[in-house]
Image (cartoon, rainbow, N blue to C red):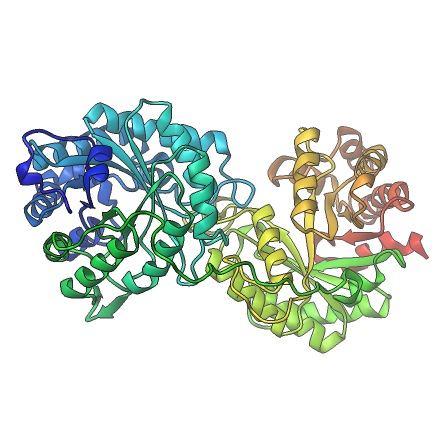
Length: 620
């Protein structure tokens, strides 16, 4: 039966409580604070410093409702989430105060769980946070929570196994307090990157986790199946369930969760019947929900783990055959059969694409194979690259290569965009991380960067296998021709090659380099990556003048113009002589890589398409 905290004379270990019966946790903190007037864009963790009485009041209401443990108000108190609020320097104080406030509210018998949520961005290789940085961030938070006096840790709402494992590793470095690990699952029954409940349990049991579960995202009905699957897979661990109070509805300017306390209590009993040993609530649940759960759990005897028989878990969908690379687009068909030429055109800053289309027609007349369209080049606001690609294909018949950045979209937006692009006939996508907003016209704009270029490639690879990132079927496989970038001039040569190898392993099918000017560097780079067996388009940006060369070298990220090249541009003077010298330098680099590469990608300086066409004259 559920343990009754009123009968305890001192705090027992969470593991002891679970061994004796069903344990009841608390409900939501964030939505409780929101319902009391805290704006949704506020840093809720900081309220531990500025409004401790409000936080304590919520804790006390859960204690009065029957919770056997309460979670600290520190879900987002890590450096990656506090940083955007300018609060990273107060990380330790926020976490310690969160633990202190909860400890005061808990009294003598109720336990305090140090709440640790995800970092807010995926880890490598899907995102750009390294495993070492993640472990360090989690360890900083766990140390402060332990110093504040928590009884155990709960790692909750983890979006993926690699995030959960990083947090578990970190917490274990700061002591031997018990650790509960809970992931969040989609309505389709997998993590956002497609990991099944069975795989989660198996992996975390291998890590020695004793309590594993699910929280957030799903409402009670959807979570019931997830918990069944976790219980059926568990061998040594106990399973916990902490669902949302359904999905929120937007009512009169505020978000409202509609699941009643009675409804939550009904599913609480069902969780116990299928084998869960710890229950509670997540977003939208209140002390009223927990009070009804407490009454309900007193009447339920837990079943023995593994006794519940359920239908076979959802396995991976049978993979449909992928579309061969050469059948994906006109460009894909040409690569390897001829030396292809692509020229980059920037979208207009307004709504009139006329001049860009004129330049595209000029390229077609000169037998150019494809047009590249940059996506918000140098973090500037322009017509969307998708729209410009579509207009170019419709009005010129040329194939296009869409540059797609990770800067402006989250995981949902990326997948929606790509599905829409494919439906419109855009097939070639170059995956790039994107310049940060601070480099452009809007330095205060917010960047998203849910994933970096490698993560974006993985998303497109999923779509090419007929499923989204969560493993949900989308119909027939897409035929996206996936490209990636590379920089032969990067000072950290080994790191650049390692990342390029990761991109190809993730699914990149062709490589487009940054502009290169040194023929020896071109040849060295192309020979070094021959083992990847991936078509390469050499990047070329003919220099316009000495001033232009100095600007690119000193002020444009990723551009390196060797000293001897800048000296040649200085000696060439200005005007036509300088432009001719810039074209000659670009041709020398192109000639050096012509036999090892499969194409060239020319970026016209100041939209001077005539200079780009002069560079590729040597191919004829």
